[in-house]
Image (cartoon, rainbow, N blue to C red; front, top):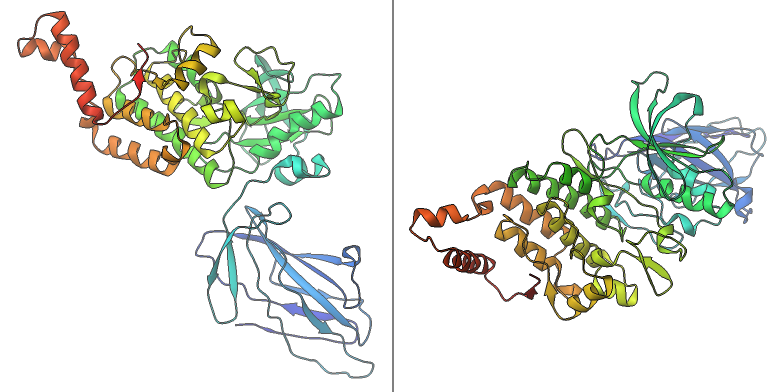
Length: 471
């Protein structure tokens, strides 16, 4: 239902009703814009903000038609403006109130680049349509002014709220520190702080802050959370939640053999859930690897490292990233079509996720061991694949092989991977590994026979044709 609103010679009182969104998104406020009907240029719009679903426009010209649009802002950002409605102020001496029904469609939607908008349209009443956002990633490099992307997606934090305690590493642009963030009215908490070293160029500053513009668009328990940025003082900083156990690869190496298969699958499930969220938002990570997964004190794994500039620079000295078609690529983690043609898609992220699975189940072993990058490329081309790590349950290695299908169309989607891991967690017996001791109990004593039987069991469990395994 729409509430009546009033018009006078110099004002319009407008109200609109927005149906409940079934608790999916809380509306934070509204932005209304208006202009005289004859005005064609965007610059002639006047803007008014309102926390309620009503507003009074005053100081208007008499007997003049005004075009009005309204949009809502939720926790995922502004939706697009409603269709234009036209209302007129009254002529001189009318001295009466005119009932105006403001019939607008308010869209609760996530902003996207110029032409593409994705949202579900839900008919709620005869008059009101609310479009509920299907949140989609916006590339900050599409902004004419990159600083606008930072302002839109990252919260500026007062430098006085931050105390740096110790340096814990080095990033591409400067040091990585641990510190404390104390915002008035909020509990103090630890944060990780990436700093931009002095003497930077404007391009380096833009590339550095692009990670914050990307990270700030994501809200998921398995994606590293952006606390905010400091851009108005030096050094420029990016603040994220602090993950006590650091990078997953080094954490696993320090705790070799200490976790049960269910715990490892739980970690993998968290990573897959985070990357599924990214995939649903049309974001391709391009660098999924255990080194880019962070672990907190509760063993929750979170996807991190959203900086894209390392793929664009040729002068990086990191041997993990190898030159390919004008950019840097982490060969051992990258799908063959991405290496050959720079074709990065969600399916290439699936390939990389399979390598992450192998890293987790091998407790941080280096994929393909000491093989050269060119040898890895050649082996993959000849259909060789990594073998199961020691004590790796067969269903997990089978899932890895699915992720490493040469044809990207044959690889599972991340929703399929999450579902497969959930089935394993619900059925822990499927993760049981047959050990030589089990064979001893049934009288198989010769080591050669044990190895042959174990190999046969592994093959039977996979139950399908597979590529040749690298041993």
